[in-house]
Image (cartoon, rainbow over all chains, first blue to last red; front, side, top):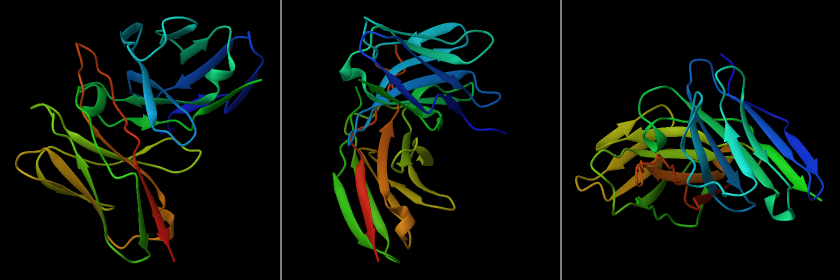
Length: 117
Length: 112
């Protein structure tokens, strides 16, 4: 059973471009979470999704950021018109149906490191 | 919102037992306590989860007192490879949400 997969692992964008980060959850997992981590800091929750639904996006900036988890295919975190402050590691996690959030074990991917020039 | 407080860093030597305590005064009745480990340039990895008393698995033990306002992660006989950041989490449903709050974590440095 493959773990959570994220691609690309490294992404370089220039200011103003769009960044698309993909996350394929573990087989049988229907919950996906996205986090952002700056160097030397903890993970910051961004958004929690179930298939075709955004459940909690309270940690995601209201402008330029969007997330989806379609019925088929990976979850996508999209950042439009990137700025230097968006440079960070973005981690995706998935969990089984059932308890949500911190009460349910989350399996993390290796992350995507976004660098904005 | 449930918030956790942990020491910023700890040092230890190989073969010692390490105990990391986390405070969570506002823990809710339905919340579990979960610990994750993160190595540099990797995503966090689940270590252990508990609700009350003591939980033990092949890598760690988790001690939770009756009032559940704190918890202690115990790592027996640490090795150099246990050098990592350890996060304590409690369930948070916020105002109808399912936000998972990672604090700053505890940086454990194991020396030879």
